[in-house]
Image 1 (cartoon, rainbow, N blue to C red):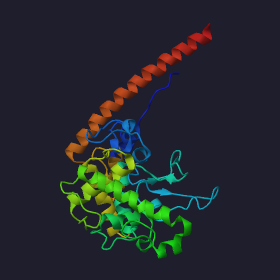
Image 2: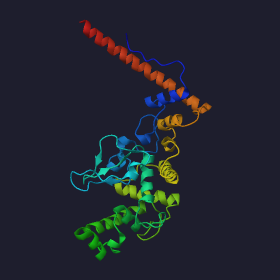
Image 3: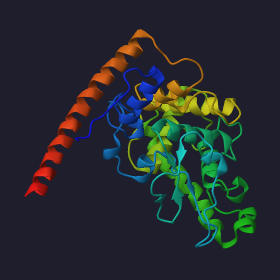
Length: 311
């Protein structure tokens, strides 16, 4: 008997939503590299060319081994951030560091903003840092270790020994590359010791694009709307005590299947407004058409196999 796809005639709406999301019939978020609903402002995964882009880790936040062959020195705060994932093959940099991966562009943006606010050791106050302070924070170098020209101080030599020159050199490279890119995004680029008001959405957007560009080597692949959803995700996560009160899907591109499925699973009755129901009917029509085409392919293949066996 040929295979047939059978579904109950009356399913709860929430169950239908989950089936449609799982099959992709509702369309899926391009920021999660799925087909279907495509945000035209976001560069698709097939056109991303470097590791910070296809891991969606736009600051290339990376963990390293303390010694060859040892376990990675993992960062629990980042691994707890919504959207962090260890699925798929781990992406390593040229120094064998593990570049963390995130499940959506919004999660990657959120993690970068979270890191800037929560783990930037040498920026005070957090929302008015200078590029130099951010360079020390991103490099993980104590500012007392280097002078204004990024040369090792006596304190730096005492702390890092022969490696002090290399560590201070990282500060110089960050500053040179960031400030070289800043004119692409700022009408009036900041100086190395000029405080930036990162509570201003425009300043934050411009500066984070500088940092993203530095890691990817080209114009960032996220648009302003995606960026703002990611920042909102991180801000809510921090505000709620490093936990997310709302489903992660609420922060993704609006027609993403993840958002629909997450809403169906959230407490309370599923959304049943007329617009949502019409979208569901359209999705059911598309699913029915797809299943009919699949059934025809299955029946045709079965006929070929049976004919081969009858010879």
